Amino acid sequence: MENVQQAKIVWTGDDWELHFVCKVEIDVDEAPGEKTVGVDLGINNFAALAYEDGHSELYPLNCLKQDDYYFSKRIALCDDSNSDQATGLNQKKSARRTHYFHTLSKRIAQRCVDEEVGTIVVGDLSGIREDEENAESKDWGIHGNLDLHSWAFDRFTDLLEYKAEMEGITVEQVSERDTSKSCSCRGRKRDATRVERGLYVCDECETVANADVNGAENIRQKVSPSPATDGGDRSNGWLAQPSTFLFDKETGAFVPQEQVTS
Ligand SMILES: [Zn+2]
Image: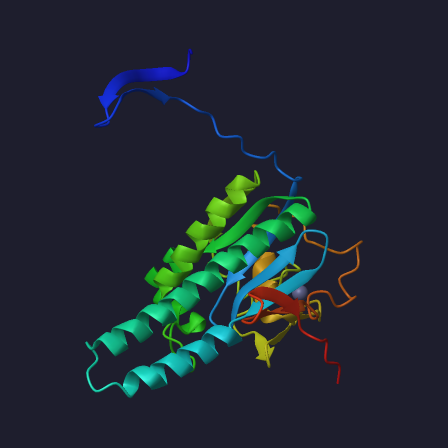
């Protein structure tokens, strides 16, 4: 009984009950490993992941965009934006988002367990909001009809932290400064990067990389500085060919998108 901090007798109306307040330690799992993963959060790919041993994953926002479009159209058709109908639609839209954030954060935590990751490195977006120059490169809310504001990223990061912690995984936030502007080969920082259709080409090492994966790898390197090389070879294309997972609204799970090669 050494954990009991307080005991009191409570009359419930029928009986006397003895209530104890105890101190309980919650078991948190041990870290699944010592590897790191970098996570770049953004508006097109909500999350891009770069794993230490050289593979990468993308989680596009397409489903949220479709949802937003659908709900925004229906809300616009309501006579009164304060009506029960409009309020109900807004609540549904927000519930769908929350569900997506929960599912994705859980999925990432589970992937880290599979990949023996002990530290998730996430770009801290608060620095970017204060930095006008970088703010433009992130295109907050400008893309399409998705009104996804920076608070959504903070909320997602909180959820990820919570779910990772349950698995014994640490989440570290680092400044995103320059992570989208330089190649993860750690070459010179260029003023202008060549980005076409989401692909980034380094002027120095000629590596072709998905721009978001390159950003995620730069974020990862802020905590674990040795470049992920997938067995010492940067040219095998892992930076350019991430696995893409789409959210399936029917099953509420992430499914791999068929790799389309042209
Ligand atoms: Zn390079």
